[in-house]
Image (tube, rainbow, N blue to C red):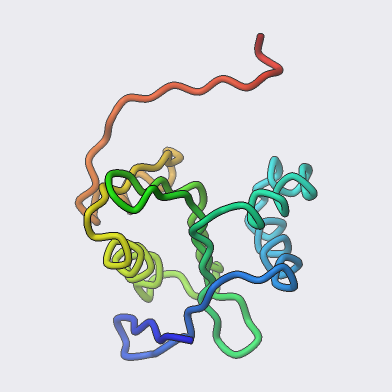
Length: 140
């Protein structure tokens, strides 16, 4: 287990996701009203189990934040989800978590999709916007 230090000097534990952690991840998704992930609970769990980047930040038994993604370790690290528990926002947890991941895979660029509400967070962290497209099987 490693430590993640934030703005006010608080240190949290950071560790790899394990299957037994999924209920905490799911509950955080419920609280955030990420309804697609909540509704597709089994698929979301399988996604966690098959991701090669899945980290949790914990304060004792409390899930502070998580990050899930995929990486080839050489060119691209794609962040699929980054979520900070509402009670821990403003401490720099998300920023430190992104920095931690980028140091794990320093050769890669980090790509991700973001909502309009998180745009300012990523811009403050010096990410630049890029164009992309998305289509699900239901949209054929």
